[in-house]
Image (cartoon, rainbow, N blue to C red; front, top):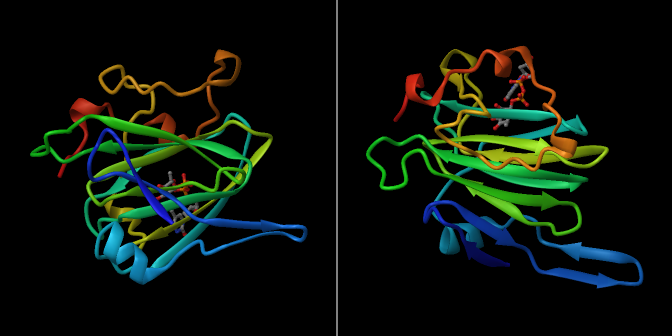
Length: 181
Ligand SMILES: Cc1cn([C@H]2C[C@H](O)[C@@H](COP(=O)(O)OP(=O)(O)O[C@H]3O[C@@H](C)C(=O)[C@@H](O)[C@H]3O)O2)c(=O)[nH]c1=O
């Protein structure tokens, strides 16, 4: 496994070592000892798995209690995965990282606590798995608008079409009005 830096120092890309042979491949997708030594000390308590269709955008989500760090990867298809720094005391407040995660590249994105997270599906379907450092708490959940010009996230929108969103995400807050850390 190897860590790749991003333009936000706390956000990391992880590239597992993939052992391919005539049967297919093998990889260690998660090791607690390696993560604690090479990324940061964390204990994960919840695993999530979602399937989405082409053009779906989920996000940008975060919780202000039970604050979640998330380690995301994709097992079917491809997504453009985004982390936005919501920590107002941070040097990178309001900045974002976007990375293509796919079943092919097997990249993982570490989205620390204090970041909003979202992804956009660029293939027919995509199945995304992510482990979280704290539990789901819908009372403390917030959504920031994916298309906020202040964030100016460069989503790779297919044919420039509007993404498919949940009702919650259609009614998300502008970044300037959003609760921060
Ligand atoms: C996130 C979540 C949802 N749910 C339920 C609530 C709801 O009925 C249904 C769908 O929830 P949502 O519409 O919030 O799902 P979704 O829009 O996929 O929300 C997720 O988006 C990505 C980007 C994240 O980073 C996650 O933390 C989470 O916020 O699943 C849980 O039971 N546990 C959970 O941890």
